[in-house]
Length: 309
Ligand SMILES: NC(=O)c1ccc[n+]([C@@H]2O[C@H](COP(=O)([O-])OP(=O)(O)OC[C@H]3O[C@@H](n4cnc5c(N)ncnc54)[C@H](OP(=O)(O)O)[C@@H]3O)[C@@H](O)[C@H]2O)c1
Image (cartoon, rainbow, N blue to C red):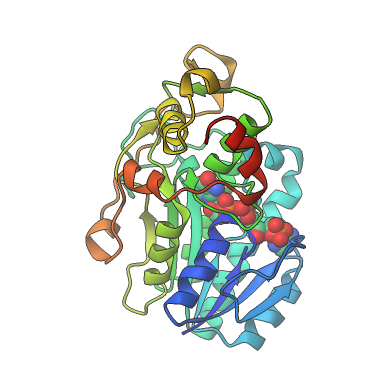
């Protein structure tokens, strides 16, 4: 299948390029500011500013895709607050335009949304539960879902996904890469014992997105995540243990409840994965299975070895 992929240099997009190429698909992938090595798995790598909607339309039409996968976003909530207009262009106008193009070409659009559309007070969340975002990022993701459904009815899937683990092209994007970097640079991590997330590996999610490119795959609003909810603290301990590091030295347990951050960080974003979990070959993974696949980014090997990794 010919697939047009945005966000190919990101954590999820980089994994999608690799997973799709291994399955024999031909992926044209868009990068933005990425200036590292060519992204593995791409048949063609394009550099585009995805806020330029006219260039996107030309690139998509030229690629003649059989499916479009949107992994591009401004994915940091704090950056969205600082740059709301640019965030709106990437998080709402881009998926809307891609959905219009999918409808024009009669192909599927797989768009990535977020657990952040919920407020964290009523977990586990099902696909039909009302959204109640706490941040601009969450509001934009909710708006993107409505835009995709309106512009590409029957062709669009908007998948809400959790905090992601795994390996990003630059080695700096995922939870475990950030934690390892903190530890390598001598910073202990303060991790909440009462902030619950149903984390997922980016390569497992990429396999789900690829299945959703199939013409008979489910569409509309969907949920995907790992098999079990964990606190940030438990997650940090599991990551430290994976690399033989001493969690007692590297992690400070703290509570979210009662702090000012509780206004913008949800207590529990566990997701009910039906109907997707019943429709796909790819299965949600337990934390132990996810963590066993984690590796140390190359540039951190020496400093983490000094800590015992
Ligand atoms: N990571 C998580 O824990 C998480 C959790 C829930 C939902 N999500 C969602 O999952 C999706 C993928 O997230 P991710 O973590 O893979 O994001 P990421 O690592 O931050 O990657 C973002 C991608 O968007 C591209 N991009 C941003 N602005 C661009 C522009 N103006 N022109 C061209 N490309 C641009 C980036 O390209 P360059 O770097 O080359 O500029 C990069 O490839 C997003 O929709 C995100 O909101 C992520």
